[in-house]
Image (cartoon, rainbow, N blue to C red; front, side, top):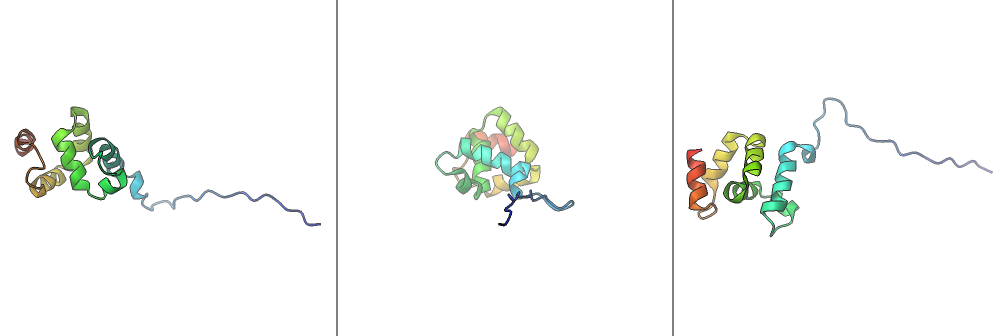
Length: 102
């Protein structure tokens, strides 16, 4: 009779110095959270595939705390680039004026 031992599954650890997965990136996590809140008509996975859409939605209708979180996580150059590439009508006139002067 053979003795069958239960096998333990070893945890796979990240090799030191190796980059973490994109999901653990603060910006990606923030985009996912913002997508759930501000791009409600798309699944979060679909929305984060269009990061500029999520960012412009937060720029347009985001509350103060969410806008501040986004500004902290995303570079000023990226915000400016998203604003320049935004489709006509993507931002309200009020938001457009604010972000152009900001």
